[in-house]
Amino acid sequence: MANTAEVGTVLPPAESQAGLVDSKIGEIPQWRLMARRFRRSKLAVASGIILILMYLVAAFAPFFTPTKADAVNQDFKYAKPSSWTWSGGPAICTLSQKVDPIKIETTYQKDCGKPIPLDFFGRGYKYKLLGLFETDRHLFTVPSQRLLIFGGDVNGRDVFSRILIGSRVSLTIGLVGVAIATILGSVIGTISGYFGGRTDNLIQRFIEIIMSIPTLPFFATMAAVLSPDMPVTERYFLITLVLSLVAWAGLARQVRGKVMAYSSSDYIHAARSAGSSHARIIGAHLLPNATSHIVVVATLAVPATILAETALSFLGLGMLPPAISWGVLLKDASTIDVLQQYPWLLIPAVFVVLAVTCFQLLGDGLRDAVDPYI
Amino acid sequence: MKYKKWATGFVKGDFGQSFSFREPVSDLIWSRLALSIFLSVTALVMAWVVAIPVGVYSATHRYKLADNIITLIQFIGVAIPEFLLALTGLVLVARYTDLEVGGLNSQDYKNAPMIFDKMVDTAQHLWLPLLVIAVGSTAWLTRVMRANLLDVLGQQYVQTARAKGVSERKVIWKHATRNALHPLVMTLGTTLSVLISGEAIVSIIFGLPTTGQALLETLISKDTYVAATLLVFLSALLIIGNLIGDILLAWIDPRAKTAE
Image (tube, rainbow over all chains, first blue to last red; front, side, top):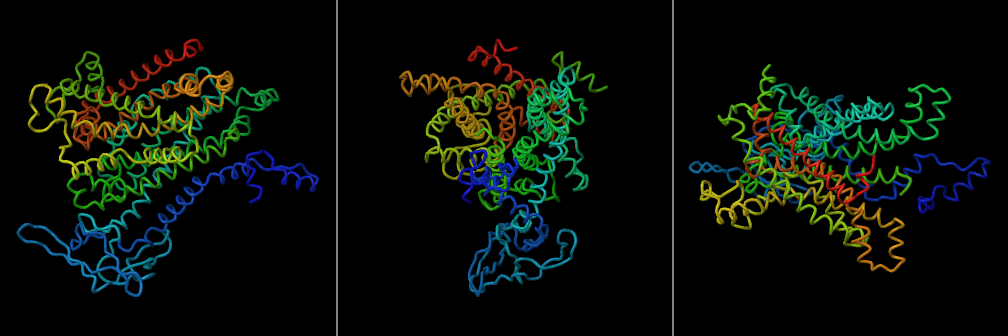
């Protein structure tokens, strides 16, 4: 840790001396310099850790969910989040439903005299862990009743379980969408910046057309073309494609700028006069230089894509039930009456905000880390 | 074939017929467009009015407590989706005040002529949506402003100005801030795009009759002609915004005119 105090300098003296003893020139690879600069930004590191945790939970989501996400139970329609008590371990109070037959209102009576203790690593519904091993163990379950950490929705489904399962769609759609957009943007941006001239002109005008359409309406228009009754997986991939088709334009712009700046530099001229082919110049000289920049721009594009998916699903144009994503969950909370009576339906939003903020802070930290001139 | 017919008609001002509203699209659009432009432009002005001073303050008090708080608020402001903010706003206002929110006017004023009372009523309905639309952009612009000013403050001419004894206030406002404004003007197009997207989703929640709201609704109900026309108009709005941005830039920075 002594070295990290002076990571701002290009070569910390301790390292370079150690290098001299080895009779070689002290040398730290570029990526390690970046890693050091990145570690300086505590906020970015913390965000990265939170994101890794979120993705891990998403990957093992069924293990963490006490109830099946789509298990309907009218006995817990709009039930409040379970109240916690203690009974040789954390436990929840029993909840009994009363239906007023005249006003058709459901009320809930909680009874903390008969607590139901949590069963850690207990048996619950069957699922396949990572799609490989079939098991029915869960982190925590309750033997009877239903554990509703974040309450129940209109059909008595467990909002907590639905958030965890929904995170799989919401968190990956951003990553996959941006990955496709990055590949598209890098290829097109490199071509545009490297060859210049008429090709460049054509591509740039095309990008300008795409960028002249306001984002959300554009997403919505493309998503609206999709048929509402296609299978969930198919829709997932098409929505991802829609998101990436809009996002690549901005990325291509950035990559083009970088490539243009590099391709007029001396070492590219040198490579060209030495007879390198276009493919070699691009692959060996331009892309490695632009990689760090591309990574940063891509990271910063993820939150926008997550938000776009959430907004689209919220409007009923993105993912549709029975698929579960954060946007789909928030659609249940779209009217003011529901919100006032059942405010816990808004909890998925907390996770959206958390994920988006973390990605932004991470991207910010990465940007500062890869730019050696800060 | 249908597209060709629609496209030729479009140039002549005939935008086709709406399936769901059962009236010509052109009748639908103009009043909505006016409201959209009003909302976007007002939100833009609000965002700028707040973002510039706050950004300057944040940059001049770098890493102080106030700056850190402002930075944190900015990040959250950017991260909260507009529809969430709109929903929360609706709930809070409905719970703690007796103002009627949602819609453009109260029931009593729906068909009343545009008199003073109605304008007050409209204003009461619009302040919350406006606030919600402006928040995200304000947060983002503050961030841009702060970064720009920090860049500029490190320049030599700022040092020169300080060295020759110009008061700090004048250094910041006259020498530095003026030059830090350029990127803000350049991003006018992007900001406007964000505002238009925000306006669309916020109007749906508040039930405001704007272009964005109509677009999303017609998309859901597959009302092709209206949706296509609205999309063209929104894009036109954005292009005009970009043009204004370029003109403004040439005005505040004469160098932009001579470049290339």
